[in-house]
Structure formats: structure tokens, C-alpha cells
Amino acid sequence: MIFLKLFLEFFHIGLFSFGGGYATLPFLYRIAQIHDWYTVQQLSDLIGIASITPGPVGVNAATYAGFMTGGVAGAAIATVAVILPSFIIIIIVSRMLEKFRENKYVCSVIYVLKPAACGLLAAVGINMFMNNGYNFFGFLLLACLFASSLYDRKSPLFYLGISALVGLIAGFFNLTG
Amino acid sequence: MLLGGGYVILPILQNELVEKKNWLSDSELHEFYALGQSVPGIIAANVSVFTGYKLLGLSGAFAAIAGITMPAFLAIIVIARLVGEVSYLKFIQSIFWGVGVGVLMLIIMAVRELWARSVVDRFSYVIFFLSFVLSACFQAPPTVVIILAIFIGIWIQYQKRLENRE
Image 1: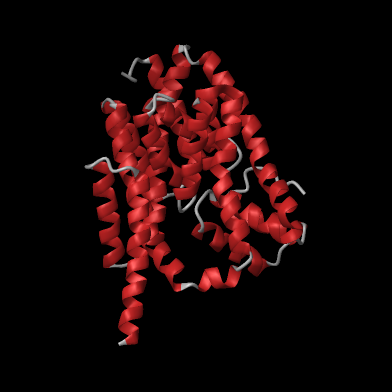
Image 2: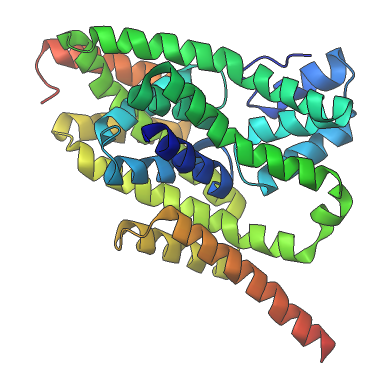
């Protein structure tokens, strides 16, 4: 039964997440709230791991979430489920490529979907920040990373690396709260 | 036929598919990339399915999707096992404490990037704000917000069409 639920949840993520990259995040966060498959804390670890593993973050996150819920079989089911909608839709769209692209309804829907997806992601950011309950030091680290990004934007790996290192050092001085 | 994993970024795709393998022309790749963003799902997976399907039909699409997911799939399972084994260690927990902050930073960056591409006028600003409030304050499921956005998009175009007719 858990496998059917996994399949349905991730199929639905594949079907409704637009915009790539972290577009699956609001859905993954929702799962953390309504199922006890993984906690928000684990979701945060998951995104970190998915971001440093080769491959698209959305697929990696599905694999990881599936693995935590139902082992290797769960991972396989979640991965297949999250890419299956793309697969089906693209096979259909490929046949009428030109028409699809120039369709005014499609353009109009995407024009609305993009800012909506952006709003969803911003909401997840706020929710995760509140949920993680960072102490002053964590907040300071985030502020420093953000300030530095305003001057010079580095790759995601850079920020993950720095914050992991700072976490490691902070742990020795019991600053991680 | 395998594409390998990690081809998230356009330049890499370009190098591999257009220049090395000659599977696609430059304009085809850009079109697939644009299309990959306008159908639901993960962009890199979408582009690989488009490419595979164009080259070899259904079997090509299968091969491409398997190629782009398999390396990541195996890597994730290994890492997930490892993390499970060592997660009780104090210094691993400290590292993940830091990674948690880093992830928030990545989300901020993703939001800024999306914002630059999507919030282009007053109307899209309103949509952003509505979606944010619905999700953050009223805990609306993301699916509901997305479906609402789809309906609004259709409705706008429908109104435009009515106006043009008059």
C-alpha cells in the first residue's frame, strides 16, 4: 500500500511541478507535512544531498525520498513516478510541436504559472526557515552568505561547501544549538 | 545512446549533444530546452525525452530517460545508505546543520533567479504575491495553487480573444 501511495504522490509531483530546478520543493515540503515519510529536517538534508549529486535535483529528491520511505524498491517507484508524466506528455506534445509552442493559451498559462511557482518556492523558504529553528549563529551564517552573494554570485556547490565547513567548525564549539 | 547524468545546464547539453555527437542542431536544442520548461516535470529529464524521442522514437525516449536518471539513482542510494549509517555522529550532525543553512541560501538564489525570469509586470507581481500568501499563510497545497494559476492563464487568454472579436 505504501508503494501505491508513493507512486501516486510522486506521479502528482511530476504532473504539477513547473519551472524545473527546485519546482518540486513545495510538493516535497507538503509531503513532509501530511505523511510521516520524512521530516522537514530530513527534507533539508535531502536537498543538500540532491544538490551535490550529479543529476537533476528533482529526480534526486524523489529517489532519496522514496528510499527513506520504502528502501530500494521505494526509490525506484518514486523515481519512475516523478518522470512518468513528463514522459507521457512529451510523447504527445512531440507530435504537434509547432502548434503547442505557438498556442496562445499555452503561452498565457505559462506566463501565470512562472510567478506562481516562484511564490510557492518563496513560501517554502520561509516555512523551512521557521521550522528549522536556527539560533543566532545560523541566522548570522545565512546573512553572511546572502550578503556575499550580492557582491559575487558563486555556484550552489560553493555555498553548500562553505556552510558545511562552518557547521563542522561550529559543532566543535557547540554553536549549532 | 546514454546521456549520462548531471546535464542540468544548457551549455553542457550544447557541448555534448550539438558539438560532440551532432544529434541536434543548436536551434533544436534551444527549442527543446524552451519546451522542457513549458511542460510539467523536471527540465533536464524533459529535454532528454525530447531528444531521445526525436532521434529514435519511443525506444530512444526510454533510453534517454534511463540514461539521465540511472547514475543519479545509484549515487543517491549509496549516499542515502552512508548517511543513514553515520548520522548519529556528532560531527556529521554539525555538517548537516551547516548544510541546512546552505540549502536555505540555495532556495533564496532559486527564488531570485525565478523572480528575474517570471515577475515581469504588475500582473505577475500580483500572482507571485497571491501564490506566496496562499501557500505561506493559508497552507494551501501547491497543487491547488498551480491549478488555480492554470485556470487564470486560460481565462486571461479567453478574455483577450473576446476583446479581439469585438
